[in-house]
Length: 313
Image (cartoon, rainbow, N blue to C red; front, side, top):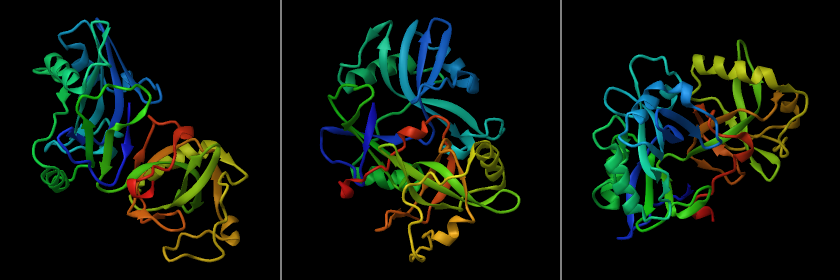
């Protein structure tokens, strides 16, 4: 089940609120001693997160399916998506935050109301190493202020009484990111020694890839090397973006790409998905002040779309 993006949290007694955890969304499937972790695009993450597998395996239930987030946290409990990608780092802990349960002992419960599913989840996970994504107390203003203060990504509002709708983006779940961010696909780059100066990223509309912006900020030497290694395998001659060149000159944010610029750029197969934070979309449909967050191995390139905010719909 997927959440609809919005720029404000819904308010009312029919809503509850949870932290939007900054990690990899994953189903955890336990069947006896066998555990499998599956990403949104059905990638098997089981071998990558042995600690999470051990936590799921120890749950006091024979068969269950949980929905949640694999999250890397520092010694203060703060999540870091970039840290999650460096799983050998010693100063972080990888945990599983469960926020829903879909099946218990082979009995599907997706049509039970949210409150019932939360109670069943708590009965399974309380006292274990699986962490619960608990509803947040307080008013919407208090919740937003507290979440912003500790630097978390955002909040997900969930409608009380709602059922779980697999594979659907439902208005019963509404996510608000306090710093706008979403997935994009790498379609090219501007080369510079020893790797690149900037990445050219975009999103799909139908089967066409649209340019969204050039990303420079947030790319550490380690990330540059890893991204460069991945995109080097997919070099192509032609530009994959249908809307480039997009400017006869530079716009106010310096993100226009002219015909002359095109000769200096290099193109790649649009396969690699990255997460990018930004200030806003400009009137030209480009990202203002984009910042690289991390690679997304759990998302398929063809599924990447521009996420509309409430004030754009």
